[in-house]
Image: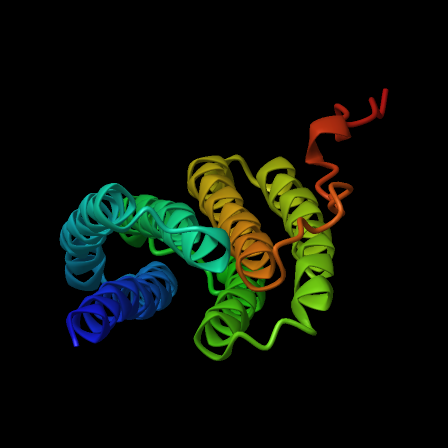
Length: 241
C-alpha cells in the first residue's frame, strides 16, 4: 500500500508538469494571436494587455523549473520519466521565449499604430504569423497526444516559415526604397517579422524535445534553415544621368 501511494504521488507530480506545459502553450498561443491582432488593427490597449500577460509565462516557467528540480531530487527518475522531466524544463523555456517574442511584437504595435500605415504593409506579417502559429499549435497537440509520427514533417515546415520570412524581408525593403516615409514603420515590421520567424524556431525546438521524450532518440541534427536575409543586399537606384 505504501508503494502504491508513492507511485500515485509520483504520477501526480509528472501529470502536474504535463498540465502546466499545456496551460503555458495555450497562453503563449493567445499572446501571439493578440499581438498580431494589435499590430494589424492598430489596437494599443490590446498590445498593452499582451505585454502585461508575459508575466504569466515567466511565473509558470519558474514553477515548472522548481517542480522539476524537486522531482529529480526526491524521485530520482530514470529513462522515460527522466526525459519527461528534463523535456518539461526545455519546453517551458521555449514557451516562455515565445511569450517574450509576442511581447516584443506588441511593443512595436503601439508605435506602428500611431503612423496609420496602409493595410498592404501588414498582409505578409499576417501570413507569416498564421504559418508560425499553425506550427506551434500542431506541436502542442503532439505533446498532448504523444503521437510523434508527424514531428519530422512539422520540423521541416520551419523551412517554409524561413522562406516566407525572406520574401517578406525583401518586400518590406522594397517599400522602404519606394517611399522614405515607409522607412520607420517598415523597420518596426522587419523586427516583428523576425520575432515571428523565431517563434517558428521555438516550435521546432519543442518538436525535437517531444520526439526525444517519446522515443529516447534525438532527431537528425541537420535541421532545415531557409532564412537567407543575411545574404541580401539593398542596391542604390541606378543613376538616370
